[in-house]
Length: 429
Ligand code: S3P
Image 1 (tube, helix red, strand yellow):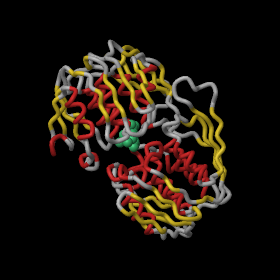
Image 2 (cartoon, helix red, strand yellow):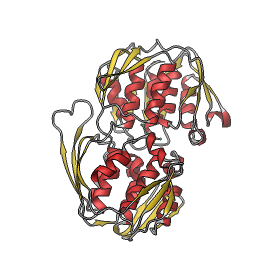
Image 3 (cartoon, helix red, strand yellow):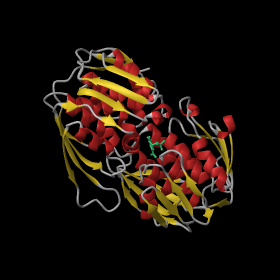
Image 4 (cartoon, rainbow, N blue to C red):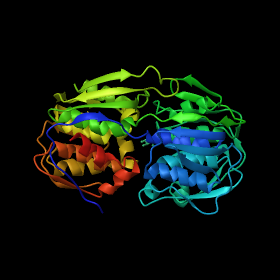
């Protein structure tokens, strides 16, 4: 277990290039694998999670190469994947698992997916249930709710799925299976979740239609065509630094090519509502597929906010770092309906309450509601990552404002999404 020591910072400044978006990098590899011809991925994230997607498609017979800084996926087309010779190892990656299950549901062979300890505790029924309704046979512990899961694909039929939870992973799995189904497949969600799969499917030639704000239909497809995909920088990774600049006096940081897809920018809206000094400049040139732009964040006083359940999907991965921002904001921040945080890589409500409390924050949870009173001068402490990348990085940012050094245990988990986090932090401090 690697300890990481963070010292209080005086001010962060610089211009930062963040790694490629994790959600979009996964999709580039997985959809590249079932497209015809070469998909050339620029700015693909290199991290343990994305490596799980790469390993999986390689095991399914797809060649993936690194060339001139790009990742080349030699797609096999929708029907060209080979049966795996061994279990597919998903590592820690929920996105690989759930999206790949949608693809495997359409294959004329069986595959078994396994994961690490954390992933093996995470709920899969949300995906296996609609895929079974489409005709796949899925077996695994707890009635197919837990890994390891064996997916026997086959002839699928299109369904209209009304998802009880706003989840991009669920939506994506059903839409990807829909490419292989007879008849159209629709997914309706209670609140729109990130729409990267829909955008990429359209970009690669699938027939996709948004019926209303939260319902989307995909038609069965003959083929997708491989293209060049330029992955925007990850707003979820940038969020740690945007909050750091907002809460450490004397800071000003600029980021570029950040993904500004409106289904992901809840964190920017919320920080703005808290009074943060953010300046956004959307980039006009690159708005064809996924919008990108530049963001500058500077220190300024923050005020507390109430986050309502319908706001959660647009900022789900940023809640740990927003809790840190709330410790420095005037008043009581309330986050309602954050239950999905309990089924992430760790229970992120418990991990953040424990870590921030150890640092002197006034934070507590009642069920799925989190209360944070600020501002509080945090103190250095020994805290734990809970084997969770976002908990680790959020606590590292909290530590920048503390009165003394903080030790974060298990910091190597940042490799899941952001291996360069320590390097970039050193660069700007
Ligand atoms: C993701 C969707 C979200 C998010 C996760 C990545 C994706 O999960 O929390 O980090 O790439 O589709 P849910 O679909 O479970 O909300």
